[in-house]
Image (cartoon, rainbow, N blue to C red; front, top):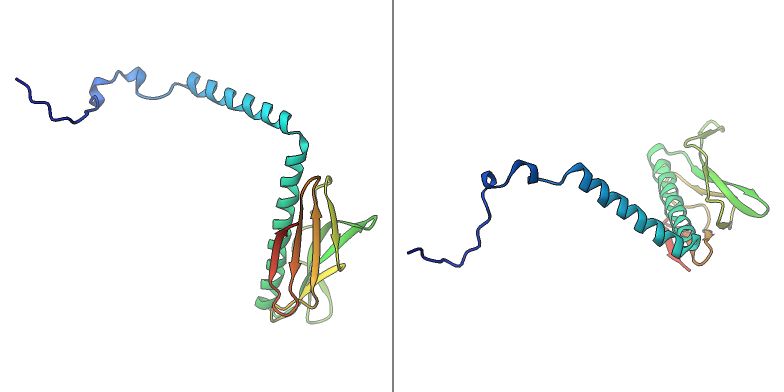
Length: 167
């Protein structure tokens, strides 16, 4: 007579046939195709609006990170660093990070970054500059507007703190 202990046991690895040890390539392919179909249907139902809102949010976060980078480079090198915005038709279309050299020159530190075309970007100043202590030379505001949502990137003058807030 066998005593039942109430424990559930799994089959031993040697009991499982080698052909069923894992998922086959065909099964994985079917799963990926189904996920792709579901994603395409979801994107078609939502339309381009939410995706453009995500792009505006991503641009706001990237802008905030680049402002932090300018601030940190200013502290590390002792030279002022700034983002210079390129405008077209009264709206910012992109920016570049620059360093003011102690000898009076200017050096581009990072590549030109372009904003997403489907968003409206307005800036309070043509440049957002940080001094050697990391403080901003002025209070700066940048507003990035998607089709349904907007974000505001704010730089506080005294501390150089950067904030991204939804509007």
